[in-house]
Every structure is written in C-alpha cells, then in structure tokens.
Length: 403
Ligand code: DAH
Image (cartoon, rainbow, N blue to C red; front, top):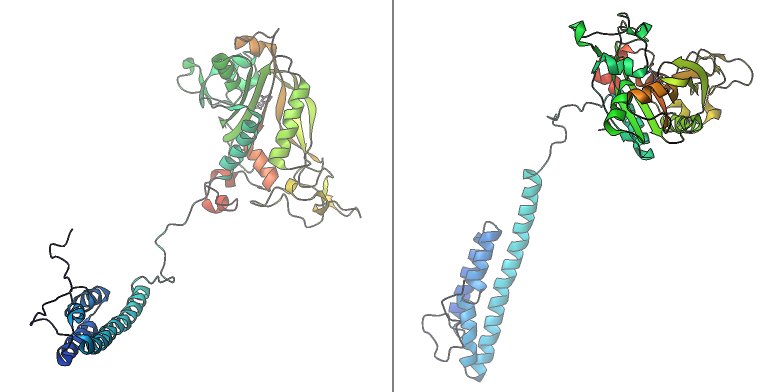
C-alpha cells in the first residue's frame, strides 16, 4: 500500500520540535530513548519495530540527520560527526540485540521441537505379505515378461468345465466324492474346482486362438489338513495355443520358468504320464535344489534352505551338500532321488481344443500346472503345510515384509 505521507525533503527551514543536529542534549536523549527501546525488545518482531521507530527514515534521528545539509560550514561538520556517532550507536545496539534474540529463538526451537526418541511409538507393528502370494506374483511376473496374459477363473466351477471339457470320462475316478467338493444341490452340477485347468477351456472360449495365458488360483480337494496335505491349495496353470507349437516349446518354457523361480542352473526333466486333457502327457521334475541332484546332504545339514532364506538354488552349487568323501546322508527333500516332482504337463488333447471351439487341425497347444505350496516347501524348506494355512504373521515375516 502506498504511504500517504510524502517523503521528507532536506529541511531548509529547521523545525523547532524535531531533534536538532546541533543540540547535543537532544541528540543524546534521542539516542538514549532508542537504546532503551532496543533493550526492551523482547523478540525479533519487537526489535524490528524499535529499529524502524528509532533508526528508520521517519525516526527523529534520521529527520535530524537531514537538517545537516541546511547548516553553515563549521556547524555542519560538527553536527555531521555527532549524528554519525548517534546513528552508529543505535545501529550497533540493534545488531547486538538481534544477535541475542536470534540465539534465544534458535535455542527455543530446539526445546519446542525436540523429539523424545525413547517415547514408545503409536505405530502398529507391520504385517507381512503371505509367502504364497509373493511366490504367485513371482510366477506371474515371469509369464508377463514372456508376453503372456494372466487370467483368473471362478472357484465355484461348473462340473462341465472342471471335468467334461477336459476330457474326463463320466466314470473318471477324480469325479468321485472322495476327491471333489460338490456344491448343493448336486443337480446344479457345480463343484469347487479341483484344479486350475478348467480355465483352459474358459480362456479359449472367451478369447480363441492363438492364446498364451497363465492362471494362478485356489483349488479344493477333500483332503484332511496335515503336514503334506491341505484341502485348499494354490496352483498355477499355463496354456499356450498357436499354430506349430510342439513339445519343444513346452520344454523351453518350463526350463525358463524353473530358472526364474528356483534360480540359475536349475534343470527339469519330463517323464511320461497320463492326464485326460493332454496327449502326450508328462510329469515335470526339477533337480533337487537342496542336494543339487546328488541325493545326499552333508550330515547335520538342515532340510531345505530354511524358511525365508534365499532359495537353495540361488546359492553356489559347490557350497551345497555334496560330500566327496561319501559321508553324506540321504536328502529328505527329494527322497535321495535328486529330483522333485513339480507338476503335470503335456500337449493339449485335441478333444479339449474341440470342446473349446478351436480347430485342432490348425492349432496345437501345450499346458502345464503346478502347486505353489509344494514349490514353497521344497524351495524354502517349509516342512509343514499347516504353517502356510494358519495365517500366523511370525511365519510370513520370515520371508520379509515386502509390500
Ligand atoms: N490339473 C492337473 C492337476 O491338478 C495338473 C496339470 C497336469 C495341469 C497336466 C496341466 C497339465 O495343464 O497339462 O493335477
């Protein structure tokens, strides 16, 4: 806002009420008044106000200073010295007081903003992601990296998708009550899916060929919960359908997945098997990451890598449990075979392609499925499946608190 009072010009006509630069007593009194105002300033704002009142452009001392120009020669020099000294005294007092008040303010900030680091925190302890979820994400990341799509399907599934579309005959033993949870009423034909394979047919019906999908999900079987079984568990299904796909493509994907999940140097092997929805079918094994395929571990070596530890496959094979002196004990992780069953796979049965509206003369495909709980068990040395379903955060925390 513009100041309505005009700037005072050099005064040619000395004002009798102002401090006169020729009057030593008046100047001293003005200085004394200024010093006491400065000394009385209790904080920096008050000091700024006092400095303006007694040293600013409109202060009596500044106004007196302007009178000097109007004085005759010798009086002018004397008044000049007097006013210079007076104004320096005030300016010095302001500077000294400012230093004191600034130091006081800084000291006060240290007190008012102090943190008591010994106070108990009000934060709740952080939880931890469940290792099964983390492992599923690792697998998803791998397939996303290949350019595949991650899909999900329903947990309550039509019997047709769970069995018929996958070429299970009406008398197939897997349909029997001892394996499958049927949803009431039975005539609705609904089950809790026993595997993630029904999403194969769903995905093909929805999207057609060519198709590359990975399907993680929960599946259900009428097993009792014990150290090696749980009625609810997790699978990841893979399905690729395109022209000219062969078992060699399947093999390449499985090997790359094994390396991604279990570490560099992991190898797989396929053994002939049977599944109604693949032909030919195979069981996929991975070289045991605990004994590195030797079937033996050093005496006293713990089973597996220990929960939360980096997977054994990530460690250098030479530091593992090989025992050149032949004093090793049988590896419990793989039952001394050097290999662990990891899942089923094969070339998609033409019946399945046809049921899902895909022409098997033009397209072929491969599929595979494996258990995530099992993978966590042999990869991280979890010995009891019940640890994975109890939801105790102390179990999860061993795998880190990644969010
Ligand atoms: N669905 C099978 C199971 O739960 C696993 C499986 C085997 C999936 C072979 C596949 C496959 O896709 O091709 O035991």
